[in-house]
Length: 278
Image 1 (cartoon, rainbow, N blue to C red):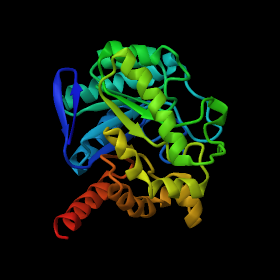
Image 2 (image 1 turned 60 degrees about the vertical axis):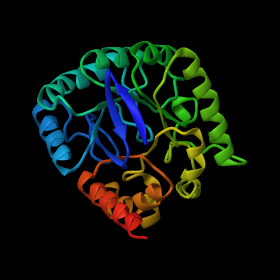
Image 3 (image 1 turned 45 degrees about the vertical axis):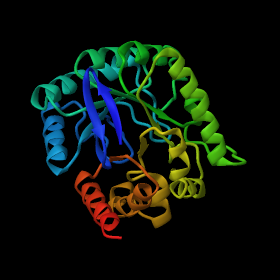
Image 4 (image 1 turned 135 degrees about the vertical axis):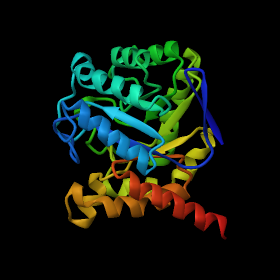
């Protein structure tokens, strides 16, 4: 069991949780444009995800698809803030994560009702982000990725991928702890800078990262290693994603970050039933 301090409220993770993705992007690889610039539709989709079993909502405005241009902090805030405020007003209890690499976005969104910062850059693209998270005293999602924007999807060369990601986490955790960050969630960065084979290998080795004694978030929803393997489109990858959530849970994932909440929630329920009846 893990606990997170969400601005003075204790949030317990004692069963696998579903984090529902709310993309406020024009061009996300999977569902970009559906809720871009439309606060009403974004709130309606959030309500639907919560009804289907989402226990955390992750809001992002920058696409991470190959070739996409990262938005500036100002551009992100223009998209995120109106939606964040409405979601917080309508769903005061739901934990909200903000998907950003910018310290300014972290500062302003946490001040306006968000709870968690989800950073794909591990503090590299904005060197003030770690200190800002520490000052805000909010949980931080640390994802393994390459260090430059242009290389985020280019496979790196690993001699021992589990060992090298473990070293990466150890170094980053040391820095975060030294600044006073208490609640850290680990994301192996599946789909970022890894080959198709390495992504599947990591799915088989999630348990190796439980040595850090921190919650593990797995975000594989509709990613290219799934739809390329199956020869389908991202929109058709729901079934493949749901199937692969099972080994992710088997390895000890505490949070599943997903587009398709209903399917993921059912997967978690079935996984728990299997484990309760060994």
